[in-house]
Image (cartoon, rainbow over all chains, first blue to last red; front, side, top):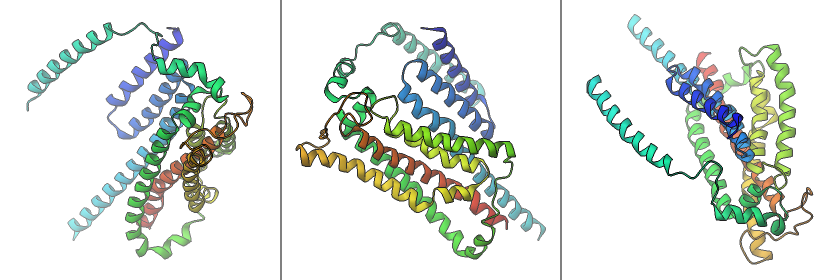
Length: 91
Length: 257
């Protein structure tokens, strides 16, 4: 095993752990992108460029964007519910 | 359940799992040792039998193409499910505020998109399209193929969105174009399989001349299959992202206003 391969494995372990430990979903989504990037490097240094090419877009762009949009949608609904509750309390 | 009981359960589970893991790892073959007979055979015959220099593509789009047909339609039907669900939800709100939507469309920009981000997206979008097309058409020659090139192509309109131009993104990738691209790609791959059935008598048998290894038009039907899958994947991803974006961006404005 080369130094590069060991470094890539360590990067995957650290960033994967960081995604689990982080509690704020927004930061979790960004860390997920970093985790995907380290996975891409891992696949590349282990001589699987085909998988690395699929991984780079799906995990660094595709998945975080969907998670971010879902977070935005959930927060909007929460804000609306809070406003409605506030209005009913005023009345 | 108290914290202590939970920790006890966790400790026991971790100890058991750790033991199994250690036993399993000690029995593994050494690093880099490969015993897959199928893989070794393919490595030996792909260039001579199919004139393809990328073994992974010749596996996906030729030797094991029937599996890829199934995978392709998994993606197709799951994106169709997303679209069906989200458009159904959107319709309820749209009927109420159909007129309000027309006015604000031109002005819609993504808050927080700086000039630098916009300039970067201007450079990135054409680069991504070029790389995507390159990877799709060189599927049988270099690493990558329909799926890989397709997702890169799909990421290009997303770059326009990140540059702060959501409705411009809809203009360079209009819904009808994306939808028909996805459908034509899915159909095209099935037709490639049917071509084998018609001309050689076996579904997904490589029926085109193989050409010279390393040339753009070599490996028979693989480049065509790669382009079909590229179209389908790019369309599917853009369609799914557009539906999610419509949910989060357009509907929220209607609610605010």
